Image (cartoon, rainbow, N blue to C red; front, side, top):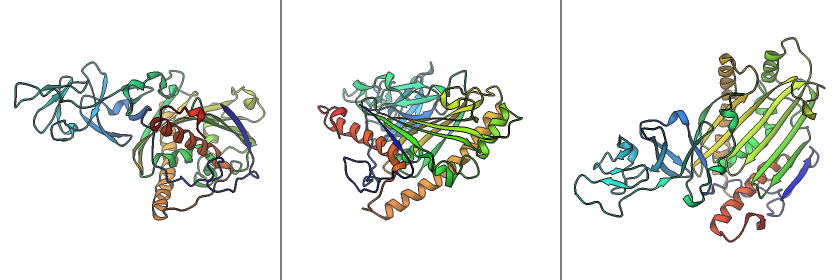
Amino acid sequence: MTDVARATPTAAHDARGGDDDLGGLTDIAASEWPMDAWYAAAYDAEVGRRLTSFTVAGLPVVLYRTLDGTPVALADACWHRLVPLSMGRLCGDEVECGYHGIRYDAEGRCTHMPAQRTINPSAGVRAFPTVERHRFIWVWPGDPAKADPELVPDMHWNDDPLWAADGKVIEVDAGYQLILDNLMDLTHEEFIHTSSIGNDDLSTAEFDTVHDKAGRRVTVTRWMRGIEPPPLWRHLLKIKFPEYHGPVDRWQIIHYQAPATICIDVGVAIAGTGAPEGDRSQGVNGYVLNTMCPTGPKTARYLWAIARNFAIDKQRVTTELREGVGNVFFEDETMLNAQQRAIDDNPGYDFYNINIDAGGMWARRLIKDMIAEEKNPDVSAGGLT
């Protein structure tokens, strides 16, 4: 089912809490996440020939690469005494516990017990389905029989040769759904990011929200025509069009893939040159790639990258853009951490929604549906409200 809604600044909801409308946000403190999903545990460069501990969907996981470079994810707890395997060492493609020397292969099977000749048939640790794609290491913490690699979120801009991309990791002291709220409503740029990407037209611009329950996707589209570009976009446009100093048409198209990935198509073009109709040749285009791995009810690992399809051979631009966007996200991190503390200090607080919250609320609805499906597999997402 796909629905489209157009929102304007005067069409705000003012209702509380009803499950049948998106006016209420009584579950803003929700901290649950679905388990049957791919989560980006790490950047590819973070995983190598050493044992590294991560937390994926609340589960301790140890990641490493076999001798041929294949990433492996095992439960970070020895079968014998639950000592973290990340405190051990690699022996070829196997993990040796640092406490009593018990070894496990890449499938989690125990292969060696130094203290005895026979191996207890129950000895083993959980191995998680793992996929390396788009420069991320994706781990499936749920039912391994459902771990279809085709369900890995599309973030191809991160390693597409026609795009230049770079990014970082943020350890956020806030629940992952609060990060989703932040990314699904970009009007906050007008107030938090005034020195970089914010402009006065964001909160008054019309936007469309499309939700696809079957495909577990939400898209929020916003165009701002004939505006003065904010500082960062003015700078980027000058790289391609150094002589232009006038107004621009700006776009933000937010693509959410449940449960925790958001790719944002962003850019500006010389005003009136056809960008809203599809001709972006007189502009500069980027993708802000975001994927969250919930580590606890109030913490998340936030992996992001900024990709562009102009000046892709200029490392200076890549570094400059990565650091500039990193500063923007630091401002978001500060706000999100403060928000989480305030929510913790006010349990049971009733929240209002306004129209700009529509995208985030549909994202939360899809997450809620995924969790409900896991608890009751006989109910399809399409049948939930």
